[in-house]
Image 1 (cartoon, rainbow, N blue to C red):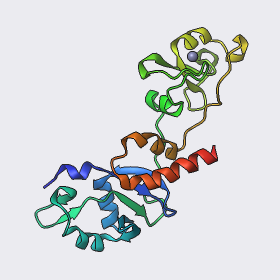
Image 2: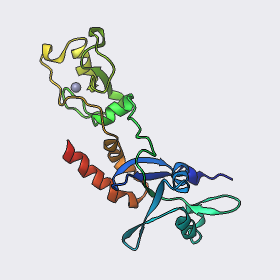
Image 3: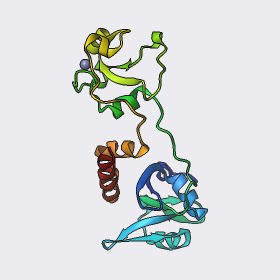
Image 4: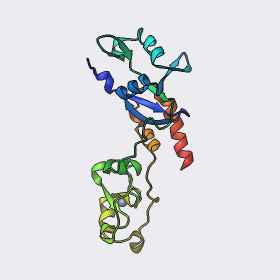
Length: 203
Ligand SMILES: [Zn+2]
């Protein structure tokens, strides 16, 4: 028996209790069951970790809507898990997509600095494709339509344009931090705030 609780997002912390990823409750429960992760629970203001058996016991008193049910048992869907081992969850690369490029550049044209809606933004190749520029994180930037048109197949410095910052491949944690407006649980905020500050300091 399946229910939608299995698709709920779960925040994943590494062994240093840093937010590294978001996974589905299905994946979180399987990591928990395999002993690769424990649930992070904030009971009475103190953080505790619970392994599968402890979490199973704890789940008996949980409300039904917080739980994943099978015919034989119910288990509460965790909000946060902490990985016990390194490398059990492969660190996903941030995919090079239009949306992710816009996210990295904060919806800001990297030439004129205007912040715009997604529909008014383009992707610009820093070294134009017809000069051998490739589509990589280091060679694409968010650009407004006028700047993109003006730059065309030139190199920016040839026509007096400059980049706000050198494009780089984003770190996964930067991306977790960006979705703060859609944090599904208050319990995540503590860890995302820490991630936010970590990201700012390392920039
Ligand atoms: Zn622009």
